[in-house]
Every structure is written in structure tokens, then in C-alpha cells.
Amino acid sequence: MSATTIDHLTDTVLSARDDARGRSGHRAEAMPYVPAASSPYVPRGVDPARLVWAETVAGGNHTHRVLARGTHLRLEDVEGTACAHLLLFNALEPWERLNVADTMKIPWQAYLGAGHPLLSGDGRVLATVLSDDSGHHDGFCGSLSDAAAQAKYGASAPESASPSGRALFTAAAAKHGLAPRDLPPSVSFFQGVRVEEDGALTFTGSAGAGRSVELVAEMPVVVLIATSPHPLDPRPDYTNGLLRVHAWAGDATTAGEDRWDATPEVHRAYLNTADYLTARGL
Figure 1 (cartoon, helix red, strand yellow):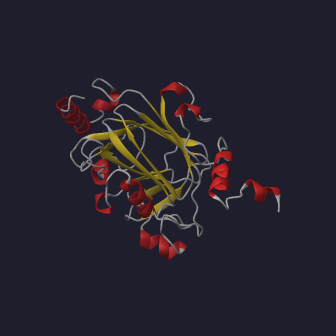
Figure 2 (cartoon, rainbow, N blue to C red):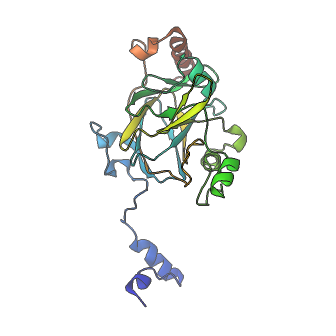
Figure 3 (cartoon, rainbow, N blue to C red):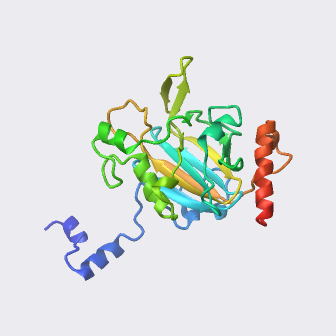
């Protein structure tokens, strides 16, 4: 019997307990860091004591969290192959959720980037993109469907080798009492799409490893993230690399900041948000 076999002996309850305890302190490539301040990848300029969420998410996986108003959320494409599908819900009233059509229509800008508000169907701002050094994002295509995953990769279930974005979102949503019918179309970060003159969609892929996007929550939000290939990704294999997530306490957008008054439509959306939060006593 090899030493490795002995190290992982689980033939009895006590052996299984010892095996589990023996793994304490071991680090995996993809894992949450608890407490968040223990992350080995704290973003530059951020006090580790302010971190409220730190995690490295493997491709073909999901994560989720409730974030307070003003929380900053940083997503990093570690290897240049991540695709982070994102959904947002009002944490206080989750029937208010991300509306991708309004997110792209109201600011008169179809491509996500710095200063872009992520809007709900109620005309309020759930979050705002603060910074972006990728420029390769998409609000047109949503996440990978079950049918598309099965057709291209042979399976779509969360426990399979090729989970769909839809299946991953469904698993994450269940942690917050949300059902599949509650899931709207998502936005995607780190794999881009451009619209041609004839309306065709062209996949532009990644901007490379180490690119990041930072958002700020403009109200308490439920964040769901699914890491699965973009629906238009032409690569034959299920390709989706590590995504690094950090969130820390900060400040929401307030009147007087440039993005508050970027356009009359965006100004009204921030006013709607402030009005809602005031009535809520927030």
C-alpha cells in the first residue's frame, strides 16, 4: 500500500474524519478565502481589513454573494480564458433584477465599459462599472444554454464536465430562494462581441490574462456569477479559466460625481435609485 493511499484512507468514519482534518490548511488553485483578508491576491491599494469577499473560481463553476450598498466588486481574468456571466438582483426585493436591454439602451451605449450603469427593469441602478482594462464584454448573447452546451460539449448539468451557464445560474439562484423562472439574461465579462454593420455578431474573445473589471453596488444586491464559455466561443473544447473575485467596503455613487450626470437618462436612473433608498431608510 502506498503512502498516498494511507494518507487518504477513508474506510471507516474515524479514518474519514482524520483524512478530512488532515487536509486543513491545504490550498487549492480555486477556492474561497476565509476570512477574505487572508486572500493572497489582495488588490493593490485595498486594505485587506476592508475585504468582504475573496475567492478564486474555477471554470465551469458558480459563486454568489449578497453585497451591501457601496461595496466594490473586482473581477479578474487570471489566465485570459475566463468568461464571467453576471446577474444582479435587488437584495431587498429580488423581483427587481438586471435588465440587460435597458442596461444597453438607456445609456445609449451598447458596449459595457467604465462608467456604464447596470440597470434594473424599474429604472434604477443596481451597480456601476467603475473601471475596466479589458474592453471585451458582452450584453447581447447571455450565457450558454443547456441545449447549446449539450450540442457542442455533450452535457450541460452542473456536475458534468461542461456545465451550461444556465445550469450554473440555477444552482446559484437556489441559494437565494430564486427559481429558474427568476433568471433574466445576463451580461458577460472578459469575452467580447461586436455588432457588424449588417447586424451580425462577431466574437472578439479575450483581452488577455490579468485584465480586470471593477463595479460598485448602488444598492444592496444579490450577485450571481457563472463561469462557462461564451455562447459564441468558437473553440471546440470547453474553455474557461480561473476567475478571481474580490469585494470590499466602499462608497456608492453620489450626486456631483461625473457618472451621476453622464447623460440625462443616467442622471434620472441615479435619482430613481436614491429616491428608492431614501424611502427604504438606507
